[in-house]
Image (tube, rainbow, N blue to C red; front, top):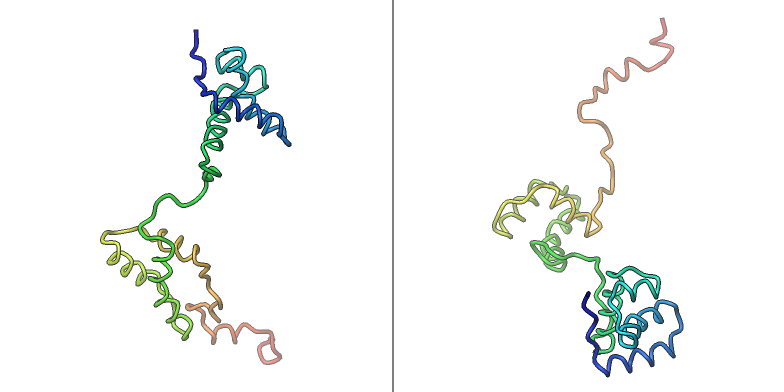
Amino acid sequence: MPKTAKLSPAVVEAAQEAARKAKTCDELRMAQTVLVPSIISVPDQTTGQIIGRSRPTVVRLRKRFRESCAGQGARRNWGGRRYGYMTVEQELQFLSHFFDQAKEGGVLIVSEIKRAYEAEVGHKVVKTTIYRMLDRHDWRKIMPRPRHPKSDTEAQEGLKKTPENSD
């Protein structure tokens, strides 16, 4: 027979109070994940069938309820940045020199930033790391180049339709 949940009397009392005061169905279900096994001693699978959720959801909701009772506050959201070579503040400090240079009319060259970044973190990184960092700090190209570097202005003038060129 599957294990049943071991619940302290304080958590059961808190669940009874939460079930009475529940304003949303999610709050009620969270309280029911504690109340149902404590009242009729059934496993989580059966509790899930009673409240209309799966067994993993029952376990997750009960854990969330226990955490809220313990006063741990709001659960940390799953999203966010879990790793990086630098914090966002350190990245901003690192890039400030390059951004100041760009404000004065200079051009940001990613390969230079990459070399400086590798020296800062102490090992090689891929170029996309630099592009993602620049994107994270809202860097973008402000002005497009005025012409293609391989364009030939004399050849373009010769191709224009003018009375001189019409034969």
